[in-house]
Every structure is written in structure tokens, then in C-alpha cells.
Image (tube, rainbow, N blue to C red; front, side):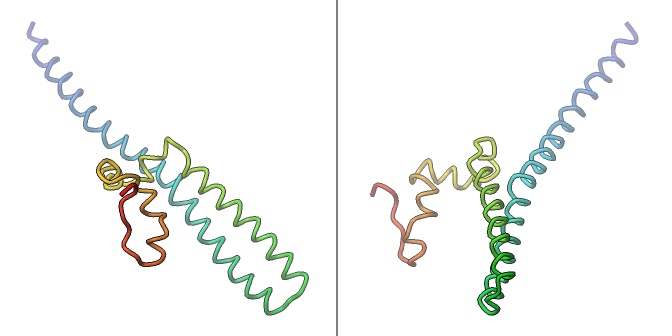
Amino acid sequence: MMLLVPLLSLVALWAYLTAISFGDAKALLDSDRFQNRTLLPTQRLVDALQKERRLSLAALGARSAARQSELAAQRRATDGARATVERYRKDPAAGDTLEPPSARAWTGCCGSWASWTTSAAWSTGATPTAPGS
């Protein structure tokens, strides 16, 4: 009976520390998933687009077959990077990491966030209106 109080105190302390550590561990795993599914593929796409742009200008200036073939290879690499970003963007498991909470709240009151951010109004500078209004 004398061991019961210290043992229960130790078990309670262990449960409390485990609960606190679990939240931190889950946050760390979520940040790793966000980095691997969002940040790194996007950075690879940006790098590929910049390299393709430089090669396009070089190919326009030189007009040699070697430059054209190098540009074609870079375009394939850029297309692969874009396909990776698209694949992760369409992944339902990555939805929580790619759509901010404010966008989810917006969807609840004003319609689809994607329809607002991809509408032609943004590109023309016009004031967008809510979908369906």
C-alpha cells in the first residue's frame, strides 16, 4: 500500500509527459511532410523554370543544335518537376498542409477559395466577386 501512492504519481507524470511529447512529435512529422510534399518540389520547380528561362535566351541568341537539344532536355526536366508539384497538390492527404486555415474558413462563408484565387479577375486587376453572386 505504501508503494501505491509513489507508483501512481510516477504513472501520472509519465502519462502527462507522454501526452505533451506526442503533440511535439506529431508537429515535427507534419512539418517534415510539408517540407517534402510542398517546399522541396516547389523549389525544384522554380529552379527548373529559371534554368529553362536562361537556356531559352541562350538558344535564341546562339541558334545552335546543341543549345536546342540542351533546352529540350531542360524542358523535360521542368515538366517533370511541374508534374511532381501537381501530383502532390492533388493529394488529398496533403490538403491540410497546402490550404491555410483562413482559406478553409473562407470556403465556409464565401464559396471556393480556389475559384477566387484562380479567377481571371485577379489577373486583370478587377475586383473579384463571390462565386455564384
